[in-house]
Image 1 (cartoon, helix red, strand yellow):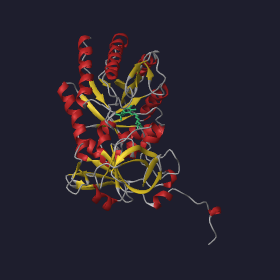
Image 2 (cartoon, protein in one colour; image 1 turned 90 degrees about the vertical axis):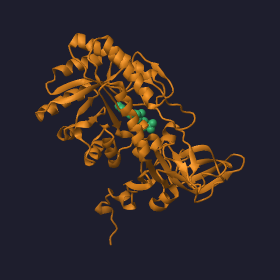
Image 3 (spheres, protein in one colour; image 1 turned 30 degrees about the vertical axis):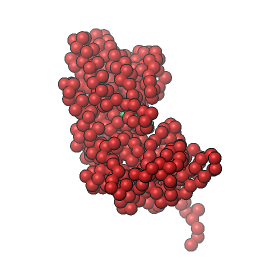
Image 4 (cartoon, protein in one colour; image 1 turned 180 degrees about the vertical axis):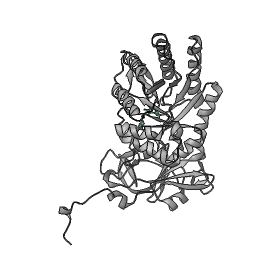
Length: 437
Ligand code: LLP
């Protein structure tokens, strides 16, 4: 997929770069980002929205993969940016991302984070709860500012991985509940707060969703709510944000739809509801994360040791694992992989790929068919662009890998590999524990 292919040498090539060369230059484990594919995914969203005729913003959910190079690409591709912490906000600002196009999310923004975002002049706060509603108004008032807000509502559509269920009452830490009147009350209060400018509402129903039905149900609920709020509170929503959650294909078990189909389902439903209600068509915002970067990422590992338990299985260990990809351990996520230095060879054995952390749960892939694996081979695991680097840890004091962006035969370092000095960089050895010299 993307620009990946097997070259004449039988090596995996991404963005015109032979991954064996990338391993030699940058070392392993290595996150490789297919820049052309990231840009293609971004354009699929932007073009699908343009086709609808509605005003829109596609805000890249930076939580999926937030590094300065990625923020720069998001800006170039006309996306906005969703951040959820001071760290993501800082990364975006350091990359020169325009503050006006930044949206700040999160269910527990601290006063410091809110002040930082106010000072930066971000475009919108997505307010999650009553405490934040009043805190934000007070902090904006202190600075003599009036800030744009969306109120995050919980529409009572609970999306699961492969299906969805409609729940009358949703048990979630996020947002103002639509069903129990909290969302209505929040808008009523927000209307009276002098330093907030309510643009509309936000709803996010889940992640890695394949069907359009959940999004359609969310639009139905939000649209009906918009009409109720207009009629009873005399407030008009200029913006409706439908969150992220659009699924991608990790393995052959996954069957996502093309991006354009999710967008069309949403925009068609919006246009029909609002036209019918004689309500000015709102601007539609979405926040895709995984579907922008997920399939553009590949993690390259070097095979080290192996262990065969006759009649049971063969374990093959790589030089990374749950520290660079915690998703199999956390969510039982499945991945596909190839032997990148012998990608043209026939599959001869079934192995299970282990990481190098000191726990049995550190497994990346169970029962993977590969050519006969040898120490020193390169293993490429696909679809690691989202929630991998972003969720990487230093467990066992393992260094975080480097990240390279590849495009048209060029490889540019986007994140340096951590050094051993980085590992102890924040450690302090108290004087009383130091050895006398
Ligand atoms: N907007 C909001 C408010 C969200 O909470 C999320 C994801 C997104 C947008 C982006 O969703 P996406 O398009 O990426 O599905 N760590 C998990 C995924 C957590 C998603 C959290 N929120 C994983 O590795 O699968």
